[in-house]
Image (tube, rainbow, N blue to C red; front, side):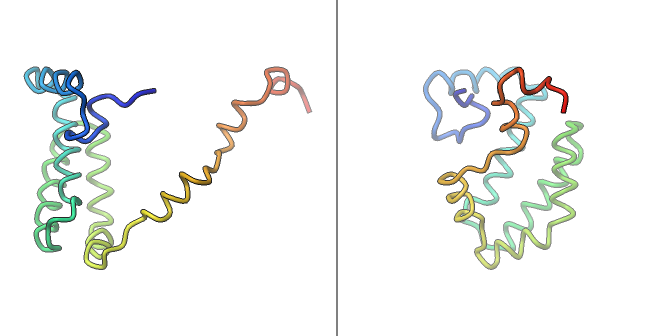
Length: 128
């Protein structure tokens, strides 16, 4: 399934996706608020900020996200608040999970639910 305009970086959007995003911005609403919070969060980790600047922006993002009234965003803000010190330590030390993600891409591990979905229909309903 192709990525929609809300799941891609703005600089990677096609012309049609950019037009869709402009329409969403004009309409406003929950989807636009969630998108703008996602993008402001992504900008914190772009790599062009020092740790103090990132900490200030992260605290501001948590405050804004906590007031967003968007349940998944509020939950994410709580998680970021809980792990704030670890997140900032990872930024300070330059730690990321790039290597692990690269390995996952080379050697994908299928979850049990995905593996089960590929079983023939008759085996799912067979009593053991």
